[in-house]
Length: 69
Image 1: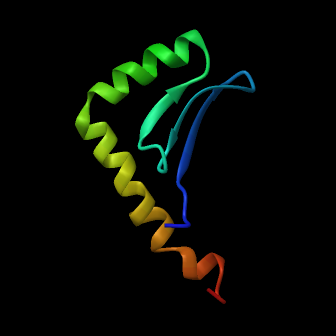
Image 2: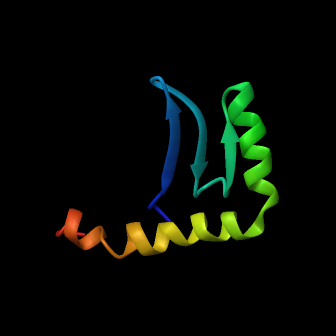
């Protein structure tokens, strides 16, 4: 529960969209990002893959990054 997976999308040092595993959807921060987030959120396969990234990337490697946990 305490592990959070965030994938940010940036262009020219400006974050325009983000996937946050705690929210479970994409969030857009610019006009372009909002349009993309709406499109990505409509596709359940994209959401499922991003939610699975938390387990495959974060949970499997937590022992490597924090050996005392």
